[in-house]
Amino acid sequence: MKKNLPHKPNILTPVMEERIINVAYGNASLLDRLMVGYLRTRNPKVEQSLASHQKIIQTSREHWNKIRVSRGFESRLLAITEVEEERQLSGFWDFLHWPKQWIQAGAVFCVFAVGLLIWNDSMQEAKQRELEAATLQAKASLAMISEIMNGTTQTVKQDVIMKHTSKPLQNSILRGTQTIKEHI
Amino acid sequence: MKVTKFASLCLGILLLSLPLGVSAQEDSLVNHPGYLNLDEIIDNNQNYITSEVYLQNYILKMIAKLTKRSEPDFSKMLSSIELIRVIEMDFKDMQDAKSRNQAQKLVDYLNSNKWDTLVRSRDEHSNVNICIQSDREDHIYALAIVNWEEDSLSVVNVVGDIDLELLARLGEQFDIDSLEDFDEVSDEG
Image (cartoon, rainbow over all chains, first blue to last red; front, side, top):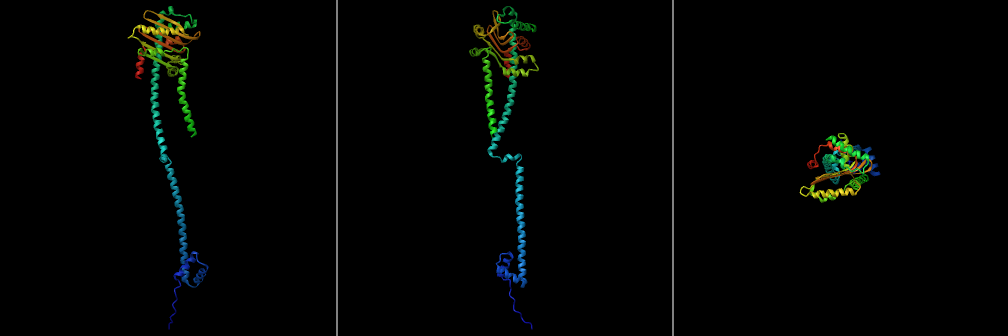
């Protein structure tokens, strides 16, 4: 006759599970560690539970490391991206990031420079016209002087007063009036 | 920042010195013994002035540079001249006494100062006085002409090294009837 064996109680009570987890994490007290160590050799369920928790912990740690690594990479990638964006911005459009006062000053300077260029051009034109007019003035003045001297040519020999002038100078005057005569 | 301040300072000094330079030139010209002061005559006869030329050395030198190739003789003469000043006055509405009076004043001034009269031509209707200043026998450094004709008066003052022969020859070459023609050109410009 088959004798009913006494029911073997479930060893993996919640308290025991907590002890096993603590051992697996390394947080268990010395007594718990001894107890779990002894039970895992006697009860395969305890051994399986411990192994299972250790595996979970190991897997979690690996994932955690991966996450940490990936987060580091991500931050570095972000930093690189920002630098790249800054580099792209530091070209022609860099002035957009300048202080407002600088932009205003630059705009005023540009307006001033353009105004100066236009003014300079008009001044050059005015100077050119002024020089042309002055050239005409000079020529007209010489023509007038020549005309007056020409008018005196007829009487110069009689009326010329040369008491204060030297002979070379007299010759110069006479040559001058003679030249005028020749050109008439 | 220091460089900017320094540059601003230099620019400021330069800008300030430009009018001073021109002013210094004018002062030296006014103090030149050959300079004929016509300001009083001009002030007293503003309404009768028909044309006026006042060309100082800096503009004469610019003209000399411009015409160096095309008109070398003209350029050469202008480069040595400090001033060309011409005034023409017309006293048609007045009696000729006015122009004669002004002319006589000028001639008296020239005679009483360091001017030598080279040519004096007179007849009933005109009176021409050509005066010079010279420091050496053949070196004329100022010329003044006072030309009175009935109701008009012309005064010329040239300061600088003057070659009369060249001046007379060049003057003949320029086909310009009168300064009034030029005035129209100048006004248009």
